[in-house]
Length: 335
Image (tube, rainbow, N blue to C red; front, top):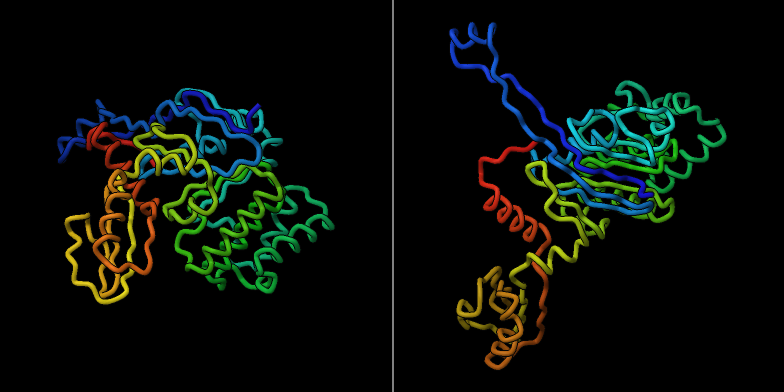
């Protein structure tokens, strides 16, 4: 049995649709009209033990709604789901002790207490023995290089330091499933890198199931081999990250460095992405990449050449544009 299984998972939110003006408010007292938003629409997937899966989609696509249903915070309108064999919204204590949900924009630590005391409170809630607690906190603070911040008030921690403490809090009870909703949002580049390294090593060492939503494509590229992409509440891609590039990347990026200053006009070969006196980067159709390289090598003295796939975020944007074209701009979803 898979660690996470969903089948036709659907969540519909009903919101009161008020008519404009005073008369609209009066009419609403007797007869109300409601608008429906399908935040998740027939979501079906399964995730095995140890997988690190990227869960992608634009704002309002339904990512957070799905994570909240899998965490038991929301009841679905239809469909089924199981996490570690449990129905999440039945909220069994045994399941609560085996998963964690970390939301980058929400605080779980007490703002006016030192981080250590918030962790101590969680220790009591989960019934963790003190020797085990000390070892877990010691190991995690060493991995995250933040042991010297344990006695600092949470409100005085930097955003990066606080996110490290949030991670320790989420992993304190050694969960088997971890849901991460934008864990690196707002962090500087150095903090993002440290958090990514920690998550990669922890996932590999503990074989923990990890679902990650992030708008930073570098998070996805470095951590996730598999991605599930959702838009308007529906999944329209589930597979290896590399397959997205193979399937949706229509262009390649060719980088050329010349032996001397070149005034050659490269516009006939493709779109100029970047140009300096002695180098150029071109965006060319995949099918023409080999021919373009051969033609330019025959015309110019080239000292270095590289052919790269386009950035993943560019491919994802193109994928979303195609999806909007198929479903129409008026389709609605939920966060």
